[in-house]
Image (cartoon, rainbow over all chains, first blue to last red; front, side, top):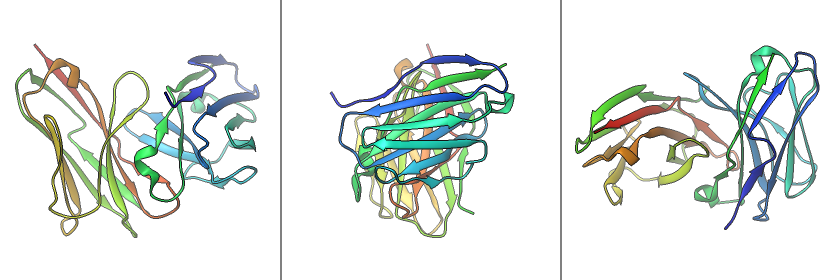
Length: 114
Length: 111
């Protein structure tokens, strides 16, 4: 069964901490994405990556960075966590080209910054 | 800026009812429209629509796209409590597999 695995289901961090959210996929997908989901705002794209060491800003990249050193792993980094980054974070992956139905999501990490 | 608007934001229906969820959009470069169902965890894929007027159907769920009026609907007939979820509409506008999502419609089906 193909999977996108996010390392933590729930996370509580303090303001100012550096936070790492990890995402691993076992489908050999080229594309990986980080979204955040907030009530009334839906899913908003933070960053995405087409390939190893490649990254592109999404719609709301401020306050975040990413790392993709290996094809299967895409990390989201909050350099200095703030309370407005409290949210549900969803990772997804997909194959290139017409594989939109192959857009597979992880189960999400609910991050609370206090 | 690409925009995806879903309505209603939430609704409550009784088991057995039929519901229609709406998704309207404004995008510069349309490639496809997708519907996802999100229960407690990860969104799961329902339909992908690329052409106007062609209904996609899966069991009690169906969806259709109108590219002239820029909207799609998702119909669920004979609703069951297991249909309770957030239904997400997303647009692919041609930049790789990047998707722009709507806010979602939260559906609750009661006994």
